[in-house]
Image 1 (cartoon, helix red, strand yellow):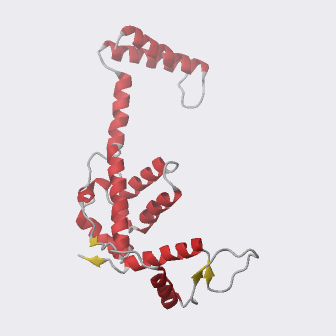
Image 2 (cartoon, rainbow, N blue to C red; image 1 turned 30 degrees about the vertical axis):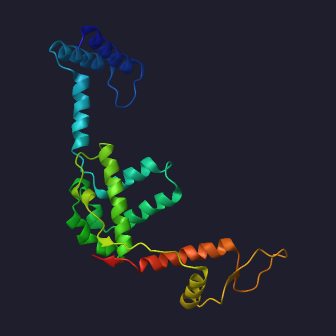
Image 3 (spheres, helix red, strand yellow; image 1 turned 90 degrees about the vertical axis):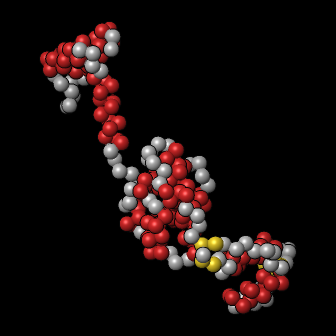
Length: 228
């Protein structure tokens, strides 16, 4: 470090002590003594500022980042960037995973560790797939951000359960029949919104019918998932 920079550091340190005599800041005499120490270290070819930064980096690198830490880091970084539904999905996974998995070091999560604990979170095959997908997204992100140094092996894990895609979309008649059977609803018919604002029981607007159909489709798709 150049002598003029060393003098600048020492002068700054001394001025801070003289003009800001608060708790934790040394008195003037002590500050001058420490300034002389800094000059001596620099004269010996040492870098006191760099050494302090290196010490902080070593302390940071020794922190064990758990799976919970990784989720919290991901959610904090993406809180204002992702839509609310996506944020809630990752919060759901974080809150659903059992403590032994959440407290495990993020770098050490393996497929076997995930399989060992996921059944305590849910028995539903589709949800096990979803939790794995969100966990992998979180771990990839914290690795790219250099929050963890090693990408855990669970990131290479495939879905634990196969999912069969529907070959066709249900017809309106099939959706209507399924609703009647599953929910005990009266026969429903899609209708335009009446001018007087009233509808008879069992009548739905096209938008309402579509929303109900989406919910039924999700329930039906869940029933088509089979374990490997």
